[in-house]
Image (tube, rainbow, N blue to C red; front, top):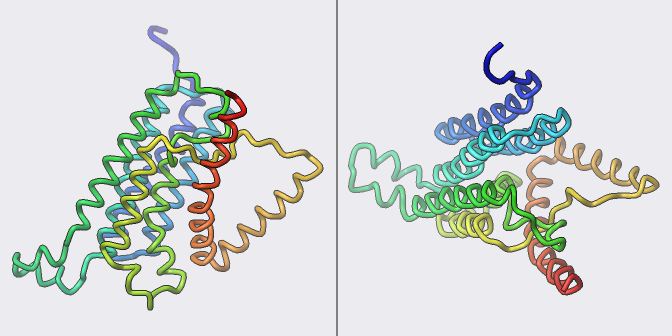
Length: 261
């Protein structure tokens, strides 16, 4: 046999990555049709499969540069493009949007400044993923062990959608949630956090004693039960908790850095 032999195991993690991409693209379709719940859920499912593909690759021992590049392309679509387009469609004035089809002069009122925010999110996500790929072979100081550099792409996409998630949790009466400026703030904030080098908490390397592992399992099961019963309320609370964790993470990072120095 000529050429390099391909390990068939490599198909599995790449298939998981493709599933994440499929959910991200499907979210775009749901956004265009105004199905906000499914659009959000598809992005969240893309995040789940994005988490799993790396785990599967390491478990099978088939991590590759091809897989890393494919993962980044999937992340860009699922967390840089799909959340932005979703927020753009959700905040667009439906009345003016219909009128703009017959009279182009209504287009500025239908679109507003929101498109600029969406472009910003996509560019920041692309910058983050490019930086991440270039840093794969670089060693970071020990005090970075429990931290990400900036907000990971899936978390950034989640933050960008937070006003919509709160709205779905019962905030329909809070009209400001659907404002282009208010939602635009979250989109821009998510973009800045993704592209920045601000330390955010990473739980990958935290080890829990076996004697206390059952507590974690119980909490995880309660979280799953809560998500299945009160999906949007639990997601809203998780988003708020994550926002709080950002300044907390910075404080811990400064403490670790000071100790290492």
